[in-house]
Image 1 (cartoon, rainbow, N blue to C red):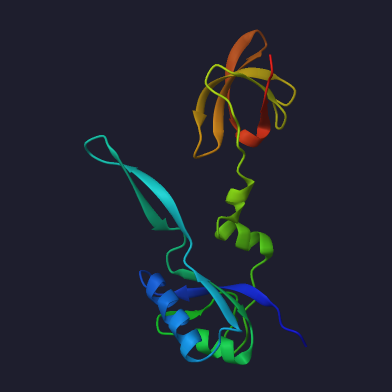
Image 2: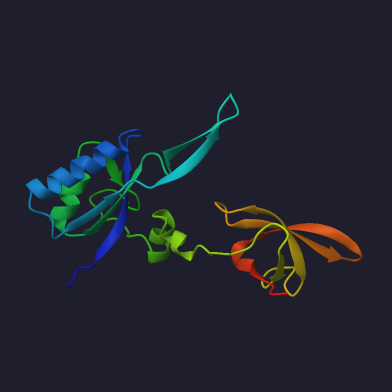
Length: 180
């Protein structure tokens, strides 16, 4: 039976995620498990915080406090080493009594690790440009860009409906630039 490397979720003590990552990486080397335990990740995202003085500060925050992702081949040895790492309280998806956990689906891994960022759209528009809406409820309509949020991949587009202007908030992937 050939075992594949897959991603699993570990439950940890909150605040100890980075220590658990460090411990697993040290244990995999000291116990020669590099062929069974591959990557250990603590999902994080960049967050911008508005400070009291009106300025902003950017910092990294854990996306899922209390959880760590590990890519591994679920052998008995690898499972034992990871499960008994200090700070690990268990695998998510394990039913206890020594049962092995279920791996994450590939699309779950992509979402958790931010590989969905690869799906970001590079839209070359500026406020005042005209766009054609290609997806969603307003598909087929055209409008003028009123606002752009590059980080969130969103735009505010003014469209004319029923003789009045309406502002629609759209994702970058839902529009294309009109060449006038």
